[in-house]
Length: 189
Ligand code: 5GP
Image (cartoon, rainbow, N blue to C red; front, side, top):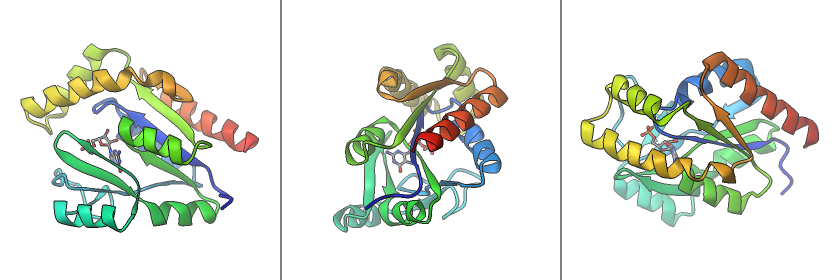
């Protein structure tokens, strides 16, 4: 099937500011849609089912795998996360550009399934900065933060596999950079 929209994989360590950049991208690029993932993680305060994630049980998640309902799925710090396939292809077919905010194992699966996708890695200015941001956020326990930082280190070793690496040293600058990467890619699509 020839997709009309652009599929974008957007990855970065926990605490790097991906979510904040994403909100600004969606505001500034009206053709962009964020894919809502399914997860077995419990909602954080302020998160709404169907908006940040579809919050599902482990049983429901396994059913969705069995129904071949995911474009990709992976386990991350004890929970499962996956991209429901149907809405992504429907939006692409409608000519919308779809962005998947996913971790590295999911990125590798999407890259394999859709080699033409655009892949962007958001990197922190430094590892120390990442540690401070994650601790400052106060949404996770010390144990979970330590595990997220360990994974962040691993994820940063995959940066070179992405089409672009954007350093989040300054929020507005990083947003401008991602928007111009997408615009350039659309020109060449
Ligand atoms: P969080 O629990 O902080 O919302 O997300 C944890 C990690 O899971 C983040 O790196 C996030 O990008 C990733 N993630 C969110 N949704 C998906 C998904 O559908 N698939 C995969 N592979 N990773 C996801």
